[in-house]
Image (cartoon, rainbow, N blue to C red):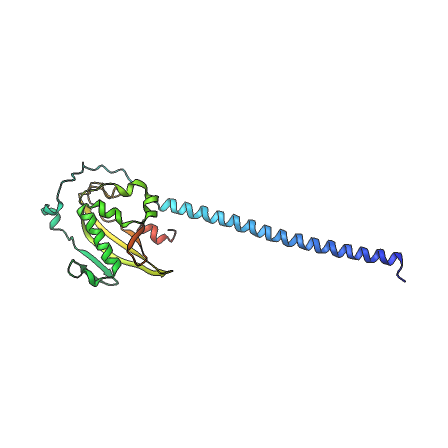
Length: 229
């Protein structure tokens, strides 16, 4: 027969096992909580560092002084502009070819699209230019994307496909766009001086769902290669 003392010992053993089990559970919970907190802190630190780097990459617009824009001025009657290299070049590796109205259809669809975009800019066709963007881009850009601009004296124009990929039946392309602007008046690009100082290339990000192409974002070359955008 089990005595009272044996019963008490068994009860104490069960209580000890229960306490050890509960302590083990609390330790595991504590470890996971500490791990979660560490991940949260590291994520916050990482986001802070990325935001700091993005802030450094965000171009600060310099206040250039521009002449009053003449919206009636036809740049295609300007002899100084006509003698410049106004062709649209397509860079494909080490080779470069000229995109024209005649050979337009022989190029990738995203290059055809950007060829049209370049022509909108040159012609000062801000109505058609503003149609190239997604609703999301317009929402983020605000009214700035709708501003009127004059004909733009673009020259030394180069297009290059940086990346092309497909996800969930949607095609994405990143197009490097470089050009210079003669007699820039700031109505289209206010990050370039009136007196030509060269090119500040941009990257147009495109998406196509089969019904048409739209621009989802425009970022600078420096922002693109940072991998943060």
